[in-house]
Image (cartoon, rainbow, N blue to C red; front, top):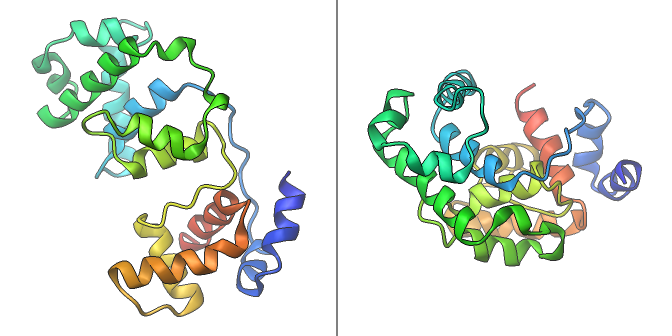
Length: 199
């Protein structure tokens, strides 16, 4: 799929120039939506290093066991806060656990659902927004055609690469128009943009 994606994306001259300079790392395949959502909540508004530290402290609360939904719900907010989580994040993570139990995440075949259906389904959880679900779709389920137009990194990269000067809804509209040409490989285009931005 990667070579087909490069073929499609290279029709965009600006992207083609980036693709020739960057080697994308392989993604580890995981279908663990529950853990992906938990990790996303931990990572919000934190540096990669700080998020990794707090995530490890969170896992340590479970004595080397998985933070299964029923185990997470047994923890008090104080125990979760002791791992470095804010009260709000701890509450959101317990919301995810309760939703995962109620809807039997371990029985769901995520491949049966479209990206749009999963955004609608998972954003019912208080604390889980569209961006969080999009990141899970891109990196956990490895869906090929996700475009997180509200992502600050993607916005900055596209403003720089395509000399876009709009703001707010105008910017999003300009980005969507450019990204439409990348379909059905918008996820891969975004991965190139993130890598390029950090060069």
